[in-house]
Image (cartoon, rainbow, N blue to C red; front, top):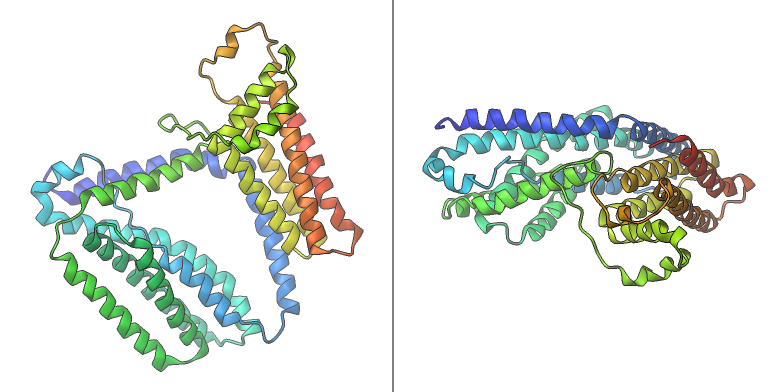
Length: 398
């Protein structure tokens, strides 16, 4: 196939279909409820904070810092496959057309998150920092340009350096974007021009160096595989992804928890379920992330009702996903050969989830104590975690 545009079109269609196939499991159902509650809670908290925000709050610096991170993270989406390092070699002189399409999609797919953060930052800039309409529009145009510059600079750097030192490049681009955005927001346009000149020189240096080396197929193939694997691992929390296998880790320091499953035939499944949860990275880190988010919400959300809703939504998501993950495997296990009750595994999973959610509630209680809320309602946050977890466990049938 000599037409690389056609190659890209076919791969792009397959890629979109692959995303849609798994996104319908991710976005629908319980996660949609969590997202609605989380957005509502954060929006309510943010709106309330804007009414009481101090006038000396460093709005320009905070907005520039957050947007700089989003602009800097610009990993190219190439959709390259393993065999391309061989089959694309005769077409290497025509590879530019394929890569232009890849970078175009990278830009339009990644700019969405940056624009979402920009929209969220508008009330902060107008109500706290006093930015004008013209300055807000100028920031939008500047963000669109900076994102384009960041994507192409990272791509040229990866090509020229064969993927070595990527984080050093990202740190440097982050500093340049941060300084440029801060000067733009503060009205120092002369310094913005100076930073833009530095950015242009930096990019052109890597463009020139890129021409001296061949295209590093292996590096971009690895980047693409890693990117898709991250998506598949995330999708695997919600549905079975056939071609993914979760990584495991010993975690010897958690062996003390196995003592909760006392020696005996009736606790066989509980012991096996504990080992599966603790040693499987996907399950363990999923619970750890959601618990961490619940703690952060308990510490930083100043409104008790919002904090209760936020923690309850996260506990709901935790129970649903952990229960589905531990019960959804249909592979043969050695424990199936032993005379164990039919529902022993379901009961053991329920027992493990109750232990986990008790720990999560205790961690949220610590977050409430750290916040130092004077209202007794704040102590309902860990109670909500336990109640919602138990109701979800009883009502959800898998």
